[in-house]
Image (cartoon, rainbow, N blue to C red; front, side, top):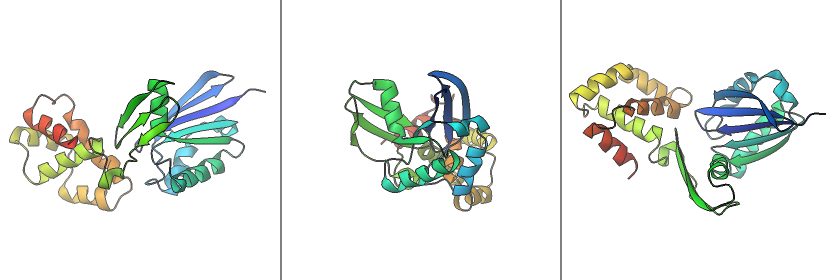
Length: 219
């Protein structure tokens, strides 16, 4: 009988899935992110329903995700996975562990993740020995896509962007104030919506204003 293993690495915006049989990769898939702190149960079900039907037969699941590491977060994710993958043994780890194992293997090092959110830790070669535990996008996530995107959006609507940057931003992020407020306060995953604005910086990093926003996000 073949050994079927499913590995997932998930942030708040997307999840990368890898399907392995007998030690070899035989499938890959990308879905929306799964974060037990923000993802609604019905949205989690929708994500699982996009996976190939064969993957439900996994014997082992290794799930590395943002929002994991706390008892509450792990319980939520365990419930979601066990409901969909009923015969699988499930191992849960914070996404920092995936980054540390990939970058450092069994050597000590400092590991950071920058995406929609942000997090960092010190890795001793086997475990995380100094995790500051991200406070999430409302209280923390310094330097993240959310942090930079929030700065751009606020500056744009407050009229604090340089004129040429504001004109370009209006084309890149063509939402009215009312649409932004609705997406931020009345729609799911506002952190993803706001973080999308951070991509505006790509290719414009040499502009003084853009550099200042990025620098401020890391202070």
